[in-house]
Length: 288
Image (tube, rainbow, N blue to C red; front, side):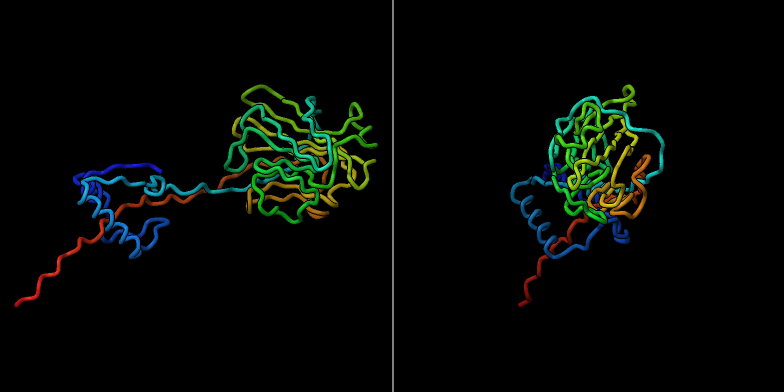
């Protein structure tokens, strides 16, 4: 919101040049003038007459016809490849644990750019929340959540358990590494988990975030004992979402998927203009 001070001389000129022709159509997003809004304009005129100037709070985005960002969708495609082993321990070793990981570069999901990510032992990566929920939502969306990637949302744990012996060093957890060189790096986040219901069985999968404004991420699965039978995979921004599988329906938890963001065309709104209120005319006195 910008502040603008207009003097008694400048304001009429502002209103004169900002006024549309009488036949001009309503602009994009325009609303009908109400008596209440006209009354507020009348108060503005009175302030000018009394003091010679007035300070106005102007929403320049609205005046210039700038619309809110249009939100597109992620489209996924099957890819090959295998997990790139993580080499840095994020410290995520627990049941229903969420750990914040700083990103080595800024990353954009949908229309928002982030510098860190919150990874859950239950197989999701949240950018704006730190929810420890272990019961997956099927189908998406996950109510009241924004900007979340669901690699393999299932009830899992990353603390020391029997099944962890299948992983390097016999350790479960979430581990990271960086591939490539700037400005084309890939940030790899690898989950090494066991299932809460049976900690002798394991799940191994990875999230890859791409640098350089590509609006792309990959999900790669290794050995996932329970497949997609009780898990959710996809991506979500409030009600905008792409779902890959959910409790046995959809694709298989094998190989990998590359998610690429496709923005939608946005309508170009017509700039809005101020219309001066009608000038009140004095009522002539009755004739004697």
